[in-house]
Amino acid sequence: MDNKEYLNEENYQKANKKVNKIGTILLVIGVLMVVSAIIIFIVFLGILKKPALASIGGPLLVFGLGFAGFGGQAKFLGHAREINAYMTQQRMPVAKEGVEKMAPSMGVAAKEIAKGVKEGLKEEEK
Image (cartoon, rainbow, N blue to C red; front, side):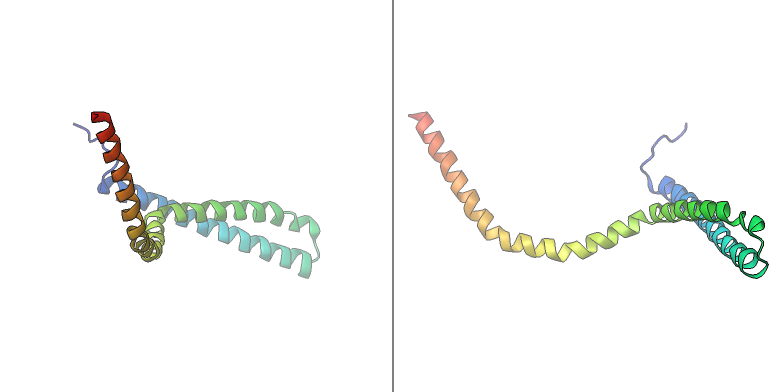
């Protein structure tokens, strides 16, 4: 019988590994394309002064930036769990301090609400 459960650690690790691998590949291809485009611009426009051959660099640069962007995004998605954990760690002390400072006020408010409910129930009984 096939396991159709999507939210388990094994499936997460498999998918995460694929996303990271794809992200790395796209990022490397994109960076290589951008570097190649820059080299083409420097060599053909600067040194050899052949603008016709330098026209290859434009599309190469655009596609390279696209690949690098998608690769970076995939790497970001592949590390989303770690990023969320880090951000939560940064917020926890502030949230804890807020709860500690609000607790007395919330206790007073809860006491007042309980008094109001108790009075309402007494009036209803009469």
